[in-house]
Length: 108
Image (cartoon, rainbow, N blue to C red; front, side, top):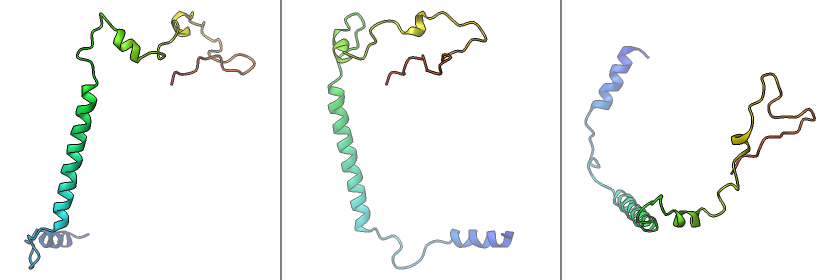
């Protein structure tokens, strides 16, 4: 594009809109605004319901309520990696000579 083409394009875009329809709002715009306001009100109402389900405080001295919610998510004991002895350099890290993977599966 040449500089004169860019200048012409900017001049056309900078002109004030003209015509009999300029400045008139469509009823469709009002409908979109009302739908957005309704959706926002629904999201606020839903979030308030979720916030009411939270405990009054997250007390770490008495975690019974939290433990009832987390039942079944804790591991039964220390992870293997917590008690494992680091391997010497140069040894195979996670696979045995047979090609099987001895690593623990990821918790999902």
